Picture 1 (cartoon, one colour):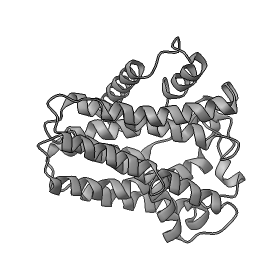
Picture 2 (cartoon, rainbow, N blue to C red):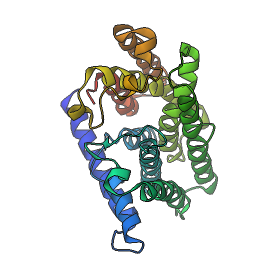
Picture 3 (spheres, rainbow, N blue to C red):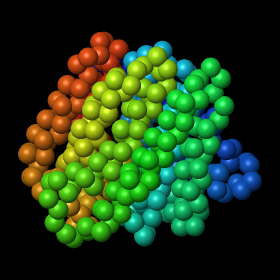
Picture 4 (tube, rainbow, N blue to C red):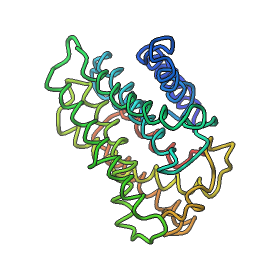
Length: 297
């Protein structure tokens, strides 16, 4: 990864942290424990890849800052909610996330469930607030895109398919369908929301962003499966080898380690190729795609 991208990522992560700090309820507000749990899960950790994709896509046009910031906060709230619920005993039953105890371990199951619920609804509250000088039609499209990505035709649906196939074999097509929903839907939404924050960006370019984000979402999951086998718990910030232990279908299990990496690289080439009609303003999106396969956590 080049130094320029590292600096940009640090700045984007810092901006995201500031926005979340400002937009999440303070822990001193009643109900204190719930608000403390929400902030515990959302602040001070994670790759912040999805917010970075919002920031990067927003560089393609004349983005309205307030709309972009609302999208950044909303996308990350949805992502964190999904992690909190995924870690619950009824789902993946994990005890470590982002290098610290998971929400239900740090607090309790009921609080974790409510924290996830509250983060999800907070996302739509933030995205639906008045945005001066931003087209209402554009804002409605942002809300609809995020709702679809989070629901049964997106993340929740992908998680349901995942749970149904523990201990079972899946074809590559089935695996891609599952992860296109569970992981890819929110990645697509992040890129799309960043593009929508630019009122001057026409739909034909938004379609290009869809073609960029779809293989990128799959590549991200393929590398997640590889890292689950190759990296240690300290590096990942979550329990290494968890999917193998749970006998979940993965790309490594289906294709083998080396072939899975090659497949991820081919997906990134597809992703970057979809940006051929964009000039240097799309360079951050190109670099983030390359980062997806070169990352170590």
